[in-house]
Image (tube, rainbow, N blue to C red; front, side, top):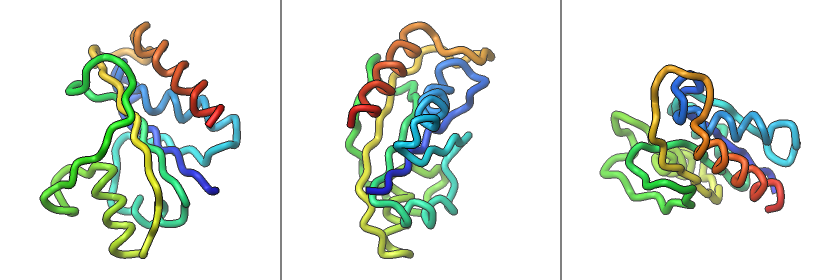
Length: 136
């Protein structure tokens, strides 16, 4: 099974770099094809369509502490102002007939200041998620 892992966020803004940290760490394992992104963009739909499974990893100020596998809500429009993993998956399905399975791991970020390091709770959460993804 070909799996794409997309870690996204701003690695220069503390906890917002969670997804990028996870993607960088797992890139070395070669278990996943990893992408480190600042944000999700429409052209990713074509890339996603080439994979059996896509895993999205990010930090979110609106999520409580801890790492969660989050069900993705259906947006009102696939082509909205800000892209979500769900809108990219729907675009891949509509334009490329993709049957890509997905997982999203979102962690509750608390600090988004100017710093390249994750806060200790998020670093611990990242290491736990990395260990989990290496096994599964």
